[in-house]
Picture 1: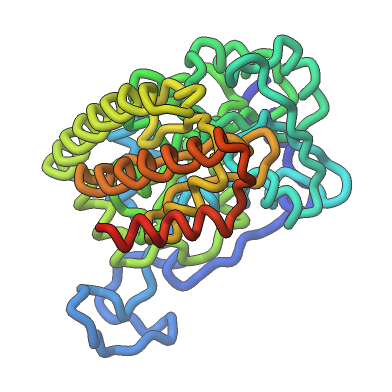
Picture 2: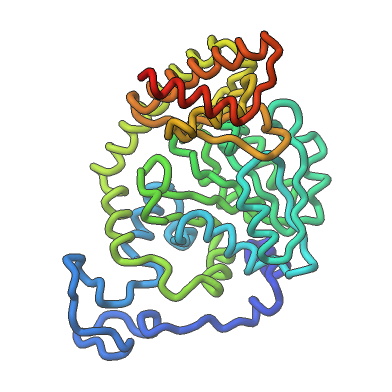
Length: 379
């Protein structure tokens, strides 16, 4: 089946028939006098060109990211973060109240959120063992329009081999396999982007929010065959990439920007591995998952009380309401000084909570806050 034949089978009929909005910028390019888009003639900013509507898909940025990801330009769509890419896939391919998507969990929560906001059923299957796909995963996803796999997975940081995911794509001929590579810069050898030419149903999500340090810019990318990209272009907003964002992204993808990113990734990976080793020696820590992202997920006694104690000191890490993660905490890899503050507070609160548990006194959130306050007053 060709990529176009696959898309023709999967796309919503009303989207297939849709003629996308033709903005003034899309209708005609170039020109020396621009009076076709009701823009202001004044640029009141130091940002060049900000008084003009930007290109829907800035050619220089599209080319730069295609070169970085080693795919063709026609296989790239620029989005407002990877989250917009997720939503576009739902809007283009999933019929509200009729279609279904699948994923394994715990994983990134926006797959289920986007499904709910688009009135699409989302089946979340349990991981097998320690964040491995179930043996019957492909079989159970045969009736899903979209199948999401976060790799490296958030919140676990674990990875699946690209060969395994490419095999999975072949087992899902009637679905789009969406591989979320938001954290791929921390383990670039695990990318599946180069398999797009071999797998017509493969979609890869990327972002500049993590390793490129541009979370506030909201710039992401969808990588897929041209038929998928053309379909998503029908439903994307006319001007999704503000000019300042495009400029920041181009700086990040320049030779200097890429070198800086790679240097910082190496530093973060080293800090992550060192922190994982230290955490494994903490009293009360039951498991530290091996991570290939910029965070660590670990299981520890009194996880919620420890989380509350740290929050009371202004030290923010991540706890979860998901029952499967009730005893787990996630720490992002920040600066050395930030990690030192969190570790000091974590060890202190853990010792006090463990001592209280051994004396068989109840531990609750109020107790955690009192402990945190006492600790803060002694610093």
